[in-house]
Image (cartoon, rainbow, N blue to C red; front, top):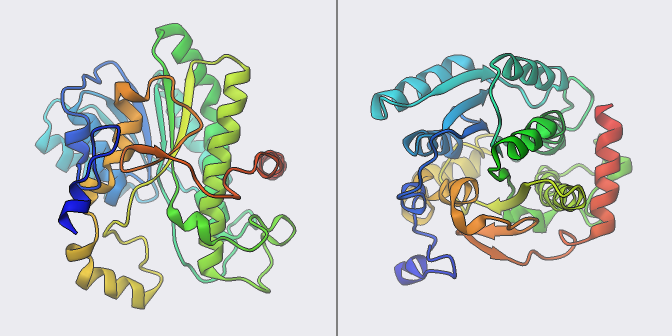
Length: 314
């Protein structure tokens, strides 16, 4: 088993590689990154490693007190860290818009956007905007955030001649969406709801979003790349809504799952590594591009999701 974990792919990295290892020697000074879900788990480790490499980080967090504690710990470890904490509730479109306004008020460029935050396996619930919670949080909130920040990312890339990067954290759970992939006409329908399939649907939406956005940016000849990823099976609190699975992960996770330092590796790799230059519209696992399975490769489904998402945010 350990041999498999150490097996390196074409990138030179493996499932056991850590975020620090995959960014070793990379100078991120002068870059600005936004990280969502930054107050715990993979998001917090991503912020720490980006700050370690000199990147100025803006943490998007639901709980600003928790975010402040994470920030303090990062600054303790990395005294030169430049980190801002801003409130961001991805279940609320008004909160997303406030976050963007607050970020713009900082008068910073934007080189890297990391859409990391997520929920999993929650009982049926609608957001304040009337959208099923997995879809609202994991996809639509990030779709709106990306839409509102895209022009700044493109302008930053053009003015600095430094490629912009958008990183979307998905999951192998995309393989377990509803039979129709995206339930466009039943997104908010409690009948037939499965928290397992709803999570898979939202993760499928992440990959489709990345693919369609990548195509759009290529058509615009924008110097911004977009990629999605599966971080691996990581011991975090994302499954706390499912008591049995959370208990299992809490007791056995440290023996069979990745730690957050390994879970953040592919995120940081896509954000900073020179190997990713010019690479866009790809899906990565363990810092290596792989071909996802259908319907994640369905171009018509991606376009339909794009139009559907636009109709929900406008």
